Image 1 (cartoon, rainbow, N blue to C red):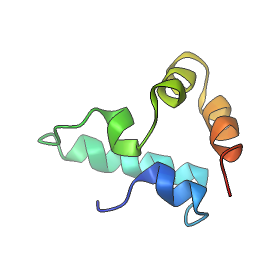
Image 2 (cartoon, helix red, strand yellow):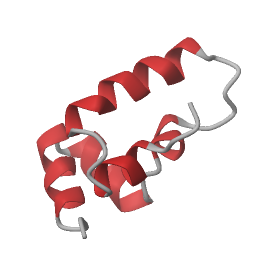
Image 3 (tube, helix red, strand yellow):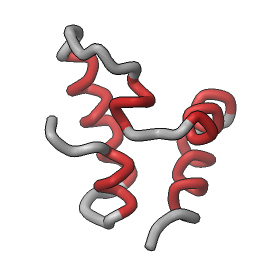
Length: 67
């Protein structure tokens, strides 16, 4: 996959639910050297919110960054 989820979402080129497709792609390509959060384009804070809170909290955080 040539695109990063966060960039695509923030640019309005995909819905938040597309994160599942990115995760599926990452899981199907085990040779990928990146951690999942890196592959998705998340900062440390975004990863922490996603892991410790919820998808909804992550979406809210990303929505605050939309142009």
